[in-house]
Structures are given as C-alpha cells and as structure tokens.
Image 1 (tube, one colour):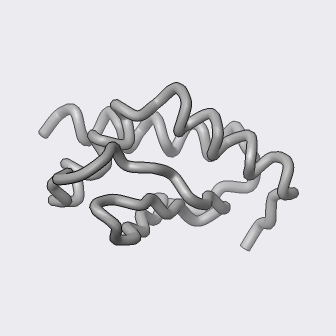
Image 2 (cartoon, one colour):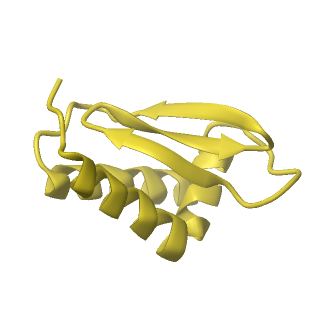
Length: 87
C-alpha cells in the first residue's frame, strides 16, 4: 500500500470537508447510508480508500484500484461521485 505523507493526507481531508460535502453525501447514497444527523465528514484517506463519519458511525469506502499519487486519489473520488450521481 502506498503511504502518503501526513501533510498530503490532511490537505486532501480538509479539502473534501470544506469544498466537497455534496460529493460525500453522494458517496453515502451510493453505499446505501442515509444521513440522519450532521453532514458526513471525511476522517482519513489513503491509497486504497477513505473513511467518513456518518451518523456517528464510520463508513469505509475502498477505491476500485490502489492509488499511487494524490492525483490518482482525486480521480478515484471524482469517479465515485460520478457513479453515485448516475444512480
């Protein structure tokens, strides 16, 4: 598994939480998780997927393939959002 440095991880997590809450809602919908409380919050991200806090529970979503770069992570997140919006 590719490990990203902590600064990169925190940047990606902060960016998602500040700018892409709608996409995280879409991820929840894609995986059948209804949002009853506050908006989902991304907790961690790594080369194989990410964890969000949804309704006080952790939801782990894995990427289709392992990512080796931050750009690949971005592309995987965008692909998941597009997939969710088609449903």
